[in-house]
Image (cartoon, rainbow, N blue to C red):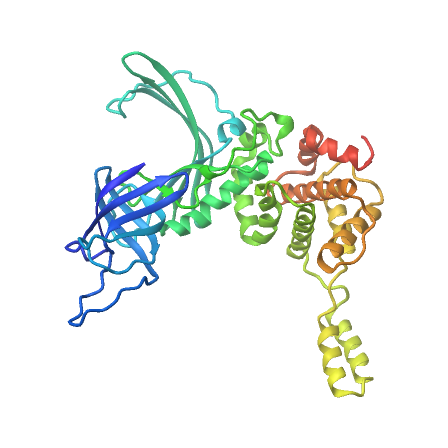
Length: 454
């Protein structure tokens, strides 16, 4: 897509530059005749050199309509329009609409991701009311509401919209499952992306066990303004779709039936969990977007996620703080050398954390209570192997586990964390157990690890 026209900085409508916005698989770029903020001419001739500039907002009127560009970056020479110099800027976001304020703030957000329809599985068209004065070619629409969540920060809805379209020669039926967010207060685009789009995209990835792309984002500045489409520099359509075109219950962590019955509770729980332990979710889900993935990075990431989850849940020391302080004081007082005493005091004071093996063992037992099936009665060897391999990756120590063995142990730990997180977002132990017994990927991991059958 290209849009050619006039571009200017807010408050400088009388000093526009002509040029073209390019939106393609490579990203977003703005090519102009001259600079957006040209250097004022000097009385004495001078040489020009590129200077790094950042513009928070750039406005444009083009053959494709009005645009608001956010975070426009470049190194222009600073020559004025008409000088014959072409300047190129990188653009982080382009919004297809005129702005009511600069920088713009939005009160409404609608977006979709990969696999939403395959995951939620809306019903096909039934009785669909006729649309009077609707979009061109649309004769009937039906909306199916799945969840509506009222939170402190705003409202989240998940629904499917089925449209029947006709033209002179054909007719079609389209269904799209969509997230709709109404924050309590208008917010800049980057805040909406971070606080809502990223969190709900992660929920889809967690529930479907598949990385997914954000395929459509639209925003609205006020209730009486039209929706504007958003193009992003780091767009999801640069990622390859990795999940199959159909997702069955045995490939999902959260089935459509569970989402239909408890969707409101799950969404609210996931947003709360994302606020409490963002690093855990980033470690657990981020590695799924790396392809191919290095085994050491994969194991290290899931073990770090486990450490973070343990700290977020309990955050307790190895022994009570007062007892530890007494031990440190007794040890340090016996050291004569002042420099050695100061070093020992610092090291020992910070050495009251639980061993990694202990943290992993407690998480395994907690996942058993959360409903995770097939776990062995004694998971000591499992926890020991993972801790040793993590120490190998982090500190260069020796580990005895083979590549295949440690791979499946990392998969097993991933399922342990998933079971705990499902409990944290509202699933009862019997529901977690049912989801795991249904999932073929978990069954395979348990079989490879030699965990007992049930």
